[in-house]
Amino acid sequence: MSNKNQNSGKKQHGFTLIEAVIAIFIVSIALIGTAAAITFALQFTTLSRNVSEAKTIIVASIEEIEALRNSQRLEFKQIENAGAVDNTNTSSVFNGFSVGFKDVSVNPGPDGVSGTDDDLRAPGADSTYGTGDDFDDNSWARTGFRRQITITRLSDTLKKIEIKVQYFGASGGIGELTGVCYLNDEARTTR
View 1 (cartoon, one colour):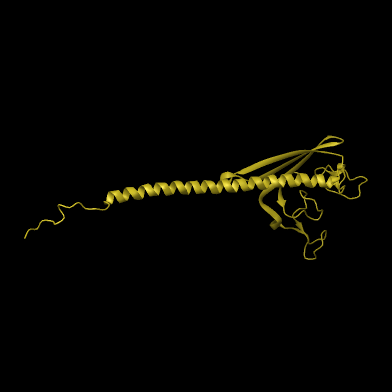
View 2 (cartoon, rainbow, N blue to C red; view 1 turned 30 degrees about the horizontal axis):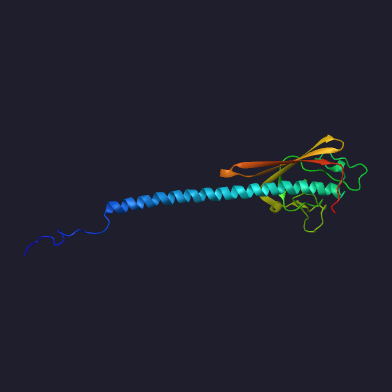
């Protein structure tokens, strides 16, 4: 009997260890690339959603200010930032729109106007606004969004309304969008 390997004349089939390691390396590179692409897509989706939400906040704010004028709930001279409101000979007192960036609230507060200092104000245990137990309810703030409304009087009949919204941007930064409209003193009615 001979001790020769019986397979010495036949070719063996299968992968060598080197071939398997190279295949695993190539697949790993492909998976890392795919994971990076998915991460980028998720960040872009979040940024896109935040930009869209910021645009919605700007448009809603502009439309609300126009509706306040058109419904004559506020007179044209009352549409101002806090500290500049003229309430003389008006049917209601308005304190004005907040100065500086403030959290955007899902609730307009006791005055019923979004963008004012009382937006986060909640009635206390007695469920009545204006009593000593009122408090600021930060759960009403829209997470990640802050708004600044700046009203500039251009003439006795024209005002510039500038609304800036800050939102969470890419990589944890803060993005900002600005919307501008011009408001005249002519109330319009919807037909």
